[in-house]
Length: 133
Image (cartoon, rainbow, N blue to C red):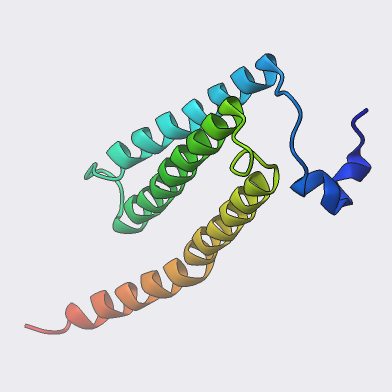
């Protein structure tokens, strides 16, 4: 029987996982496909000229996140489907999730800390440039 308490148990993370439910595999596959498609769409949008430089860079960062993490998730899902002894363990998904969270934190730090500073510097340059010949 599954319980939320298992998440805090190391034996749960490092034990051999039981047979994966086919419905759960299909749901995970659909989720990872959506991640990859969203990554491709954002990569295309990051090339459009109608967005500012900062938005295009944000789109590129998110597209990179979704593309790499989606591809890695497909590899993990493949190993889970094939039931390879070591590579199908649950702790790989834990590493994947930690990597995803760290990457999202870096993207949010870029958007909320670095972009306002860059915009401020750009506005200062524009203000000074109007006085130069």
